[in-house]
Every structure is written in structure tokens, then in C-alpha cells.
Length: 103
Image (cartoon, rainbow, N blue to C red; front, top):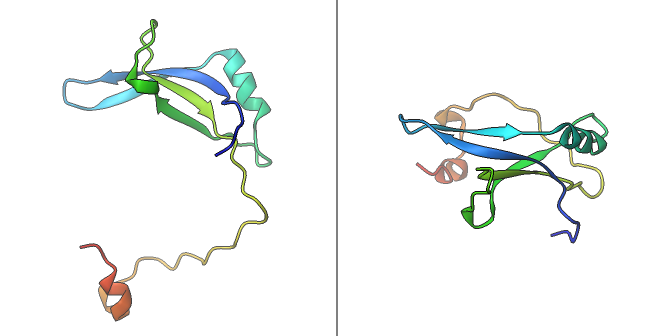
């Protein structure tokens, strides 16, 4: 875990529906947008975490969530991954692989 100070960039309210579903409605100011723009990675992306407020507290403005910029960066070059070969049928699995299926 880093000792970096968190970089907050917006707030959210959980909106619950009568059918049991919900959404998180985000409020992001122009200053928040500028902050996010300052933290774009080399591909032009920023990763933002939407988290429930500490201790589940609701702010005076009714916000239940907050947004924080994820500043984590991998150390060193990333390892290449194997190309996706598509879905595998049960007959193509080895005995060891089929023993690891959780169902």
C-alpha cells in the first residue's frame, strides 16, 4: 500500500429503485475533470475508483460514494499473455483441469 495522499475526483449518490435495482449517480465538477486529465496514463486513460463512503456515512449533500483516482502503476514491463483461443468444451480439458472447475 502506498503512502500517497488519495486524489479525490467526484462524489456519488446511490439511487435505489422499487424493483430492487440501483445506480450510482456521479457528480463531477470541472475541477475534478481537470484533475483526472492531469492523471491520464500514456494511452490517454485514467482509472477512477467509485467507493462507498467510509463507515457507510452519508454526507450533508446526500452523497453515499466518492471517486478516487487509482495511481497504481505496474513495476517493470508487463508479461505478455497467451492469446485467447475461444471457449473450451469439457472433452478438451485434461483430468487435472476438470478437477479445478468449481461446479
